Length: 320
Image (tube, rainbow, N blue to C red; front, side, top):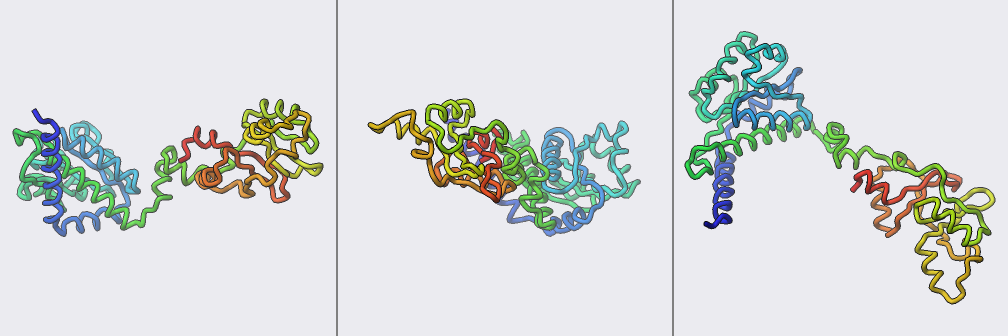
């Protein structure tokens, strides 16, 4: 059996259904967005079975893209959770048949409280559609299931339409990367946009040596510092150089190598540094990568040392 071909047929079938739906999408999507956008409450998504699982994902996508939303199971709603729906809320109800018993039971209660209802179903004449203020068609010609029974193409289309609603609302609100990061402070984008250099600096017990320090003493300080380098300062504590393990290895290859040489004789005289500790850590990483270094110095305006940023610290923090 050719499973590659079977998988391909599934993807092609679902892709065709998405394309057909895109070509036939109605202006009802405009009605839905205009209803949701000014909502002062929450967009509550509900559904049962596979529709419920898809609805849960739609609610999560909406919530993470700036539209206050949560998923409510119809059965739980009938047993007390209807109280979670406020007068300023809107309900997005999903049922492919439009006749899911558990869902239909809560519809009269929604109308009694005058809660606006957006329906996703295949039949505009279904019970769900008849209750709805806005109807969104999720009908398909063919499920990807070989029996044309299991929800496959239909759930894919429903989820994609939920994504479309979320993106429309993002466009309406001019939702930006910074806004997205606010909802995902622990994610990679949140780290890129919020973590500053100052959050990741080494500031204490730094490997600092003064002018005239012999290499044999500098090596000890480098080892204790655990960053693979020693920072060289003058009599005014201003940074004048950086002795890296690379500098040390290169000098060890020379015929005149001696541990009695002073650090300033073999160090990097103009090490890379920044003076703004509040720049994004992701920007600092780019400086490190562009200059092919492991350690970035952060100096005060008077060139005294404020802290050091090591590439390993950036990696540990998940900065990319």
